[in-house]
Image 1 (cartoon, rainbow, N blue to C red):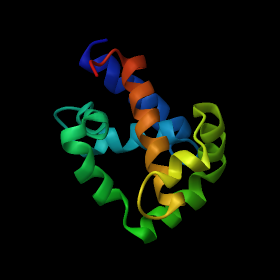
Image 2: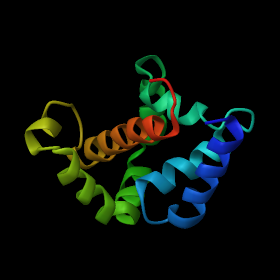
Image 3: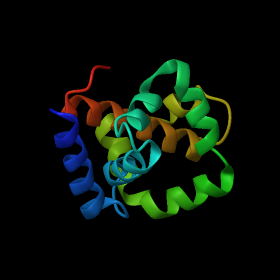
Length: 120
């Protein structure tokens, strides 16, 4: 896909799903993260060198609670779809809800990148 096609795809997803799905959340934030590169946000989420900073930025507990409340149905659906277990969540320090949110965001970003034809 060309950059314009990627931007148009992200705009379509964001317009339809920004308030209901993780794909919509990622698409919306991608379009507002770097106006010169709408793929930078996704790349930063899935890149081990930059994802830690993204995690800390996201993981403010008030943001996590609000995020989970808004996207709970999609998060739980994706938890099942992606096969994320309580055992998986317990491997990480911190709150399981926060860990679940981030794992779902990261996995969804990887899948979105693949659909957009981005190198990961």
